[in-house]
Image (cartoon, rainbow, N blue to C red):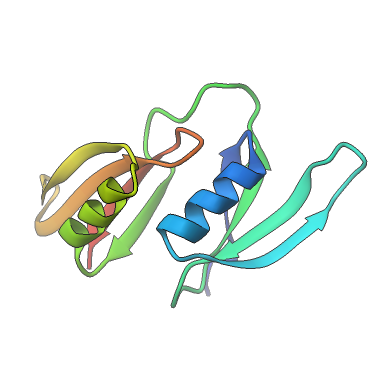
Length: 121
């Protein structure tokens, strides 16, 4: 069994799509109109992952206070350096996870203000 979609609340689909394709190497799987209101079905795939990312309309302007997605990366420090170089807001620097010694974690915000976690393998 695997999760087909991870839903992510956004207010600007184009800005979010650009963030994930440019910063995290996601590929666009679908970008189709859903209604006359202009909202689209935007689906992205992470490289080498079985879970795709789908944008849902944010209920209000408030971004998530807690991480909404955990991304596993072989080199958290290098990923943080690359994201910082692209102007991405780093919330917490790479550090050992207090709940799992030996695992490195860091947090950043996406283009929509959502808090994301990077965790080592």
